[in-house]
Amino acid sequence: MIKLTVNAAETFPILILPFFESENLQVLLNSISEQIGFEQKELYADFKAKAKETAIGMTRTQQKVYFLGLGNGKNPSEVSKVFRSFFNANKDKFKNDISVFLHNSQLGKVAADIAQGIFLGEYQIAKLKTAQKDLISIYESRSTINFQSDRDLQKLLERGRALAETQMKIMTWVDAPANYKTPQMVAAWIQESGKENGFEVEVFDEKACDEMGLKALLAVGRGSIDNPASFVVMKYTHPEAQKTVGLIGKGVTFDTGGVSLKPGDNMNYMKSDMGGAAAVSGTIEMAAKLKLKVNIVVAVPLTENCIDGKAVKPGDVIGSYSGKTIEVINTDAEGRLILADALAYVKKNHQPDVMIDLATLTGNCIQALGYAAAALLSNNDDLADSISKAGLETGEKVWRMPLWDDYKDMMKSDVADIKNLSTAPLAGAITAAKFLEEFIDGHTNWAHLDIAGVAFGDSEYGSMKSSTGFGVKLLVEWLETNL
Ligand code: BES
Ligand code: MN
Ligand code: ZN
Image 1 (cartoon, helix red, strand yellow):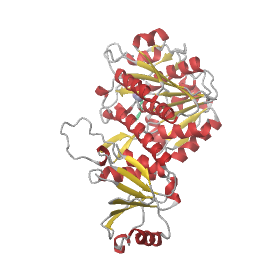
Image 2 (image 1 turned 180 degrees about the horizontal axis):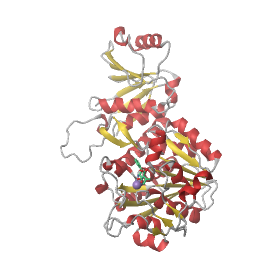
Image 3 (image 1 turned 45 degrees about the vertical axis):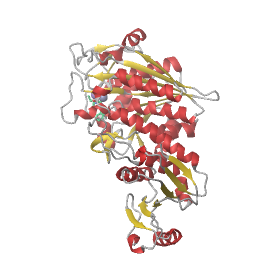
Image 4 (image 1 turned 180 degrees about the vertical axis):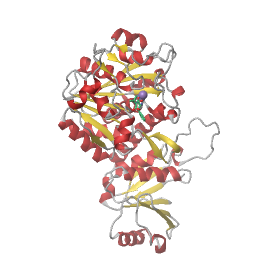
């Protein structure tokens, strides 16, 4: 395991010098170069410190120096991203001790982000390749990374590492193929995390779900005879907690669409349809690691959405935990069905002060916001504002959409209490949230985050999309500033 130290005087054979863009950058470069004995001025003559820009050279004492651009400092997720891709690209070259020179206070402030990025650089998605590489990278070595700084940064650095480790764990879950993450396997992973980090986990199997009356979850699960649905409830408590937060995450381990089958192109990406469940599980893990003064109850309904003779058919009317009947117009709108049960369950059994659900819920959310932000829908302005703010702080951005009753009639069914899909092909992210609102039983402090566009994305980890780990940093920031 890499050791993190903070020592202004100690410096190692590899030296990383991060810089934000600034007007007097060349002056700064000159003065730092003088300080460290770097004489090859021409090597940084064109260096602008744009995000991910690098310049490389040697000091008089044969120290290898990397100048690393961090961009203009306006995007809060940039620093971590720059370090992540820099370490990811160089991990096999970095085998020994490294120094990171935090030469001004602006860099001290982002120490946690730097550590987070450094550790995220280890993440890799090639977990099932058989050829083992024999190169040992810095992550498998017992090297030290020393941060040259006068400030007491140790806590911030360890926090960045802890966040990266939790994020990588849930990224592994989201990137796992569906045949490596049945609902039963995901439930076991969550149990393991609970044991390791000190929170309670209860797993309800199909039979228990049936006894509890989680009818909508079981209806979706009926399409998968061999990998039945499962319902996981996690609890973290702190003796000084003032409030209880309920977190709910969509856990569809693969979404074929069901009988309303999806087209084949890119259907493989639907292994990421449990990104909401991963995010809320990661959040309670971080809350336990950081010993946050709050009570948290997390519920994740886990199921595949597949096709079988017993699968739900379009037009079927199903029951739900709340007692309301639902006409299933389209079996591909399955996320809202399982969330309906989880929301009603958490409200009824735990009466949390706040309820927040995260779900890769609609393609329409991506139509509206693209890949830059999650959609936020809430019946409480203060809650919406505080989540939006946490989004800007962390760079895991959210953008609010309306939850007005103008959209409510679109979900009215002729034959049941509500239908799961509007007949009009518009405002899909909003009407999905209006559907969920029917199952919170009048809770006045609820927010829904549609993370369809942000949970899975392009990155240096591979040529195809992979997990972003979205949600953990956002929710931890929100918990810390609001409770
Ligand atoms: N899991 C999907 C939403 C989704 C789409 C997530 C693309 C990530 C990327 C959800 O279950 C779904 O299938 N939604 C449908 C609803 C449709 C039947 C109205 C959609 O949005 O296309
Ligand atoms: Mn679907
Ligand atoms: Zn889905």
